[in-house]
Image 1 (cartoon, rainbow, N blue to C red):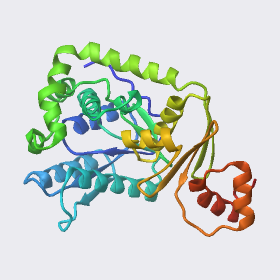
Image 2 (image 1 turned 180 degrees about the vertical axis):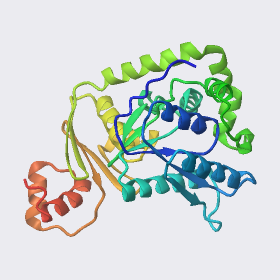
Image 3 (image 1 turned 135 degrees about the vertical axis):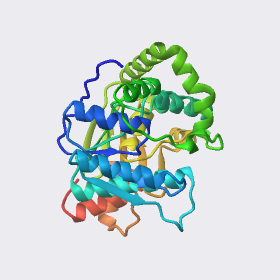
Length: 323
């Protein structure tokens, strides 16, 4: 495997661990590079070996002096890919907030990146969505690092075998009732095996092209309000919106893109308000509150979109914003 140099400068990091090929390899690669981290693992209780994976995680944590956070998927919660993903993300977010971690490190690799690309391609996606996996991204209060995105699954397996490192194989990964497994087994894994270098280079060029397409934008933030100025190109506005929403844990859909093009305003999942007025983008938590007539008139004069006003009013009440 090629020599790696992870660009992780934060000192308090949390590794999303599963005891599988990818996260087991990443655990030891982080050790080699002397990057500080603790681990977190979810026991979904869907397979007989799940408990063995948790035991392995605790053993590694004890041996290498790491904290190990464990969550057990609720037995009364229906298991689905979406529910499992939401539960895992909420678990990580809680730990990061409570323990003040600066970064979350995940073990997504090149096969995962191509798998995502192909899945988005079949749903109808733009460039930003197609290359949604980035080595570095940002949530509201922490960074997300995916340092293995240029490394294939086969390279990680070779590293584990060469160094006699234990890992587990999740049998559910072979079940093609899960959409991601269908794409993995029939497309992404085979393409990576044959065209590893070319695919890796293509992703690099696509990411460079995407950055240039964003154009000149300027952004300012007040608490959870983002104000982004852009030129008159609506596609640049949509790319800027997509980028900001990803930081907040949302992925913009094709339907939402069309709604923004037509109406210049929307509310996503009843939580996030997005609006475009002239050459300014507003993104904020969606709030329904009583507002004074004076405040409403100020918003009208300043052309503040209606779905943004509730959060802006709350900021003014806390003396965090003024016209």
